[in-house]
Image (cartoon, rainbow, N blue to C red; front, side, top):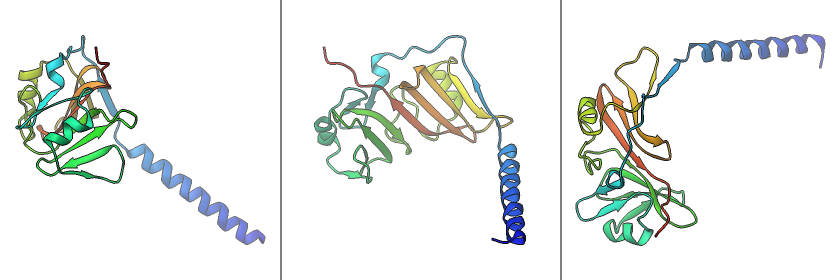
Length: 178
């Protein structure tokens, strides 16, 4: 490569790095505000009533879930499925085929304590309390996550958009059978 070509390549590389740095410096900062104490979730907080049965995060087997949701659509990943009746996603473990997570995107089913997608976030605080981890972009008080529970693996997350519940995620690790 000649000297002129090397200069062009160097200029392009510098421009790309400068543009990347500029873009990354303009992205909003994320704030994570932890509560004084965590809301302790009880066994019933992982039971999701879907109308014709109850799904228990960390305990319900593939057979139990498929008896309640006979038409599960595989989303191309061996552990994530969408039922035909509700706007939600179900995540199973690879090794045991145990239900560990449900993403609720429609107004049914409700959270274990009765909160639905579309409800105001103040109703979440009424049903679950004020001790939650708040995750938001700095300066944005309309869109944020409210995370209840002692850790992210055993929690209920309410994704809030325009101060209304936009998605509910109930998740729990596999529970050992006693």
